[in-house]
Amino acid sequence: MNKFKLQTLSGMHDILPDDQKYYQRVQKAIDSVVKYYGFEKIETPILEMAEVFYKGTGVTTDVVGKEMYSFKTKGGDIVALRPEFTPSIARSYIENGMHNLPQPVKLYAVGPCFRYERPQAGRYRQFEQLDLEVLGDSNPSIDGQIIQMSYDILKDLGFKNASIQVNSIGDSECRPYFKKILTSYLKSKKSSLCSDCQRRLKENPLRVLDCKEEKCQVVKAGAPQIVDHLCEACHAHFKQVLEFLDELELPYELNPYLVRGLDYYTKTVFEIIDKDENGISLGSLFGGGRYDGLVKILGGRDTPACGVACGIDRIVSIIRSKDVKTAKVEEPEIFMAQLGQMAKRKSLKLFEEFRKAKIPMAESFSKDSLRAQLRSANKMGAKWVLIFGQKEALENFVTVRDMKTGTQQEIALDKVVEEMKKKLAKK
Image (cartoon, rainbow, N blue to C red; front, side, top):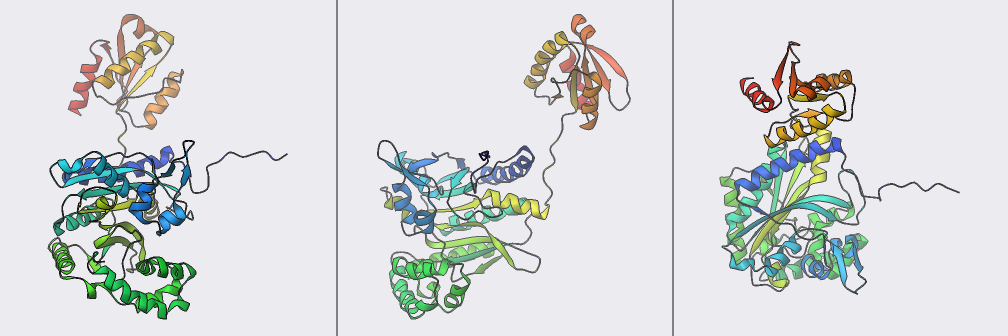
């Protein structure tokens, strides 16, 4: 009988303690940027009614059609693990009456999303995603701000070759006409398209421009460009977005075939890609754009909006591979060593007093050997060790050893927190 081996599901992964410093570094960069720009955090449920994504993301998209984890509950509801944040945040905006708040509403979310796609380095079926959303403002400056924030996060994380690709895909006024022109062109090249794009040609021809299959690239290169067919309003909006990017001195390229793979986008779409030293693309890190019709599609008011998402795991993977310097974790400068049961009990209380005083301290309560505890303190580079043995516990004092000089002094138990605070202030 074969022994069953318990392990993570394909495409799922543990984020181990050694990995946490990378995720914390990314979170620190996110926190710095979102706080500066006045974004507020929102947390939506991992599980939503599947209709949120059918209507929002689009039934014909790969995200919903191929990759979404959906199932029927015992009560008969069709629910889904969120494959992305944007429709969930739009649903929350409607449900919680956020249109009554001062507009625009600036929100960000960080958390797990789920897609059934082929696992690869930095891409998982459960993945951590960052989402920035601005709802209730149609001004092109919002598009520029979202792109700037995305770029800032990458710069803070040490990405030196990030580049922005930007396009406009128009709106309900000009896109239908362009679709007719594009469809006519693609039909003449149908035999040269991959099987997925032959299906997309019927469902949503714009999606063909998003295909990454090599055989479709030649067809795409000769396709008509939507920027040549924008209506006056979309043309004016896109022109202002580019003017903002010029003013911000951001490195961008016009990509007339960039459409993004989700149905709700209107007008501005963009991606930020990482490049190697030779300028060759290493893939997309951030992707987003404007989605002025989504809130209305989900049953809300006509609400302009713009947002962006990025896969945090992918960024962490690149940070590791590039060996970008991670934020150094500062070790506590004080270590508590104890010897004997009475000292162990009292040292737990003393440790809590240091926590209340917001003074970082390390310990090794599981060890009984003083020598082993001193080795731990020395290894982590502690400057002082508080030694709390049987004599100290009985007479209510602590022996403080200076690890550099080896000198020791006795400090009354009720004075030790204040005395250590003074030592830290003098260093």
